[in-house]
Length: 456
Length: 176
Image 1 (spheres, rainbow over the protein chains, first blue to last red):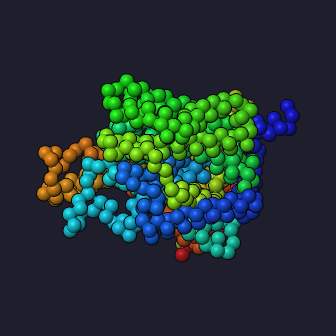
Image 2: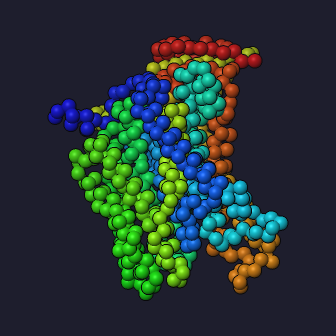
Image 3: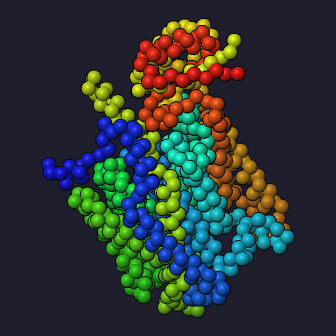
C-alpha cells in the first residue's frame, strides 16, 4: 500500500497520547491556517452585501425586492426553509449517533451541533426580513392584547414559532452541556482574557465522578428529547404549506418529505464544513477519511429516501384529481421555472450517485464540489416549493409566471450565508470544534477493547 | 479533630483503581467510601465497581419537568382560548384538542430539556468556585486524581497507600 492510500485508510490512532489531543486541538484554535481568515473576510463581505440590501429594503419598502401579489414570500421564505433544514442534521444526527454509541461521531459532532444553532438563528432572521416593516414585528408575535389580535393556536405558523424556539434553545443547551468538560480543558490551558472566558463557561467543572455520572445521564436524556423534537420541527414547517389549500402544497407526504430534505441538506453541509475545518484548523489527525466515508454513505442513503419521497409526491399529484396541483407540477417541469426544477432533480437525485465511488469518497476536492451541488439542489428545492405555487394559483388574476427576484432578494440571501459563516467561524475560533474529551474516550475504549480481545 | 483532604494523581485508571481498592480494604476508622472522589479527564463508569453505586437522580427531575411543561403548556393555551371565546370560531370548538396537542407536545419537550439541564447543574454541584478545592490541571489532560477526605491520622495511612501505588503527586488541604 503506498503512502497516499495509507493516508486514506488511516483513522484516529489508538496510541495517540491524551495530552497530545489537548495540544493539537488547542493549538489549532490559536493558530488556524490563513484560509480561515480569508474565509472569515469573505463571509464578512457577503454579510455586508446582505446588510446593505436590507437597509435599502427597510428604507424604501418590499417593492424593491420585486415582490407583488401573488409573489409575497419569494426567496426569503424559501431560504427560511433551507436554513431550518440545514439545522436538522447537526443536533439530530448527533443525538441519534450518541444514543446508538457510534463513536465516529465524536470528532465531528461539536461543529455539526454549532451548525444547527447558527442555521436556526439565520432562519429566524428571514422571518423578520420578509415582513418588510421590521419596526412592526410585534404585530406578528402571538400574545393577547388590547388590539384583539388574538393568537390563532390552530395555525401551523404559531406551532412553527413554538417548535423553532424549543429546538433552538434545546439545541443550544445540548451544545453547551456537551462542551462543558472541554471548556474546563481550555480554562486549564488558557491565559489572559481567554482564561476568564473559559472559567465562566466551565462552571467550575473538575471532572469528579459525581459530575461525570450526572453529565452522562443528563446528556443522554437531552439527546432522547431532541430526536422527536427535531422531527416535529420540520414536520411543522411542512404543515405551514401542507395545511393550506394551495395547489402543490396540500400533500400528505409533505412532513416526511421535509424531514428527509432537511436531513439531506444538513448532511451535505456537514461534509462541506468537515472539509473546511479539516483544512483551516489542521484537523487531519481527527477528521479522518474513514469518518468522511461514513458521512458520505449516510448522505447517499438519505438522498435515496428524499428521491423516493419526491417520486411519491409527483405520483400522488399526477394520479390525483386535483387539476390545479397537476398544472403546477407540469409548469415546474416545462414552464419558466423548469431550468431550476431540473437542476434540483439533477443535483438532488443524480449527483449523489457519485458517492458510490470509493475514489470520490476519498477525494476532498470531489467531495467538496458534490456537497456544494447537493446543497444547491436542496436550496433550489425550497425555492421550487414556494415560487411555482404562488405563480400559478386557482384564479387567473393570480397567474404570474414571469416574476424574478430582484438583486435585493438575492443580496439578502447571500448575506444570510455570510451571517452564518461569520457566526460559525467565530464559534470555531473560540470553542474547540473537535470534542477533546470524547476523542479521548474513543481512544480509551478502543484500546480497552483491543486489550480484552488479546486477553480472550 | 480537623479534617484533611488529600489528592493523589495517578498515571492511569488502573493505578488509581488499585490505590482505591487498597484504601477501601484497609478498613481505616472514620473513613467513609462516600468521601472518596475520583477526578478524571473522561468518564469511568467502572468507578462504581470500586465505590459502589452512586446516585444520578436527574431523570426524576426530567419526568417532573416534562409533565409540568406539558400540563402548563396545555393549561396556558386552553385558558387563553377560553378567555377570548368572543372570537368568531365558525362553529369550531373553543378549545380544539388536536392543534393544542401539538403545542402541548412542544412544551413537554421544552420543560423536559430545561429541567434536565437545571437538574444536571444541581446534582453535579455546578456552578462552583474552584478556589478552595484541590485540583490539578493535569486532571483535565491525562491523569487520574483520587481525592480522600478523612481525619489527620487516616490521611497519613492513605498517603502511604498512594505512595505505594506510585502516585505522581500528592497534595493536601486542611479543612476548617
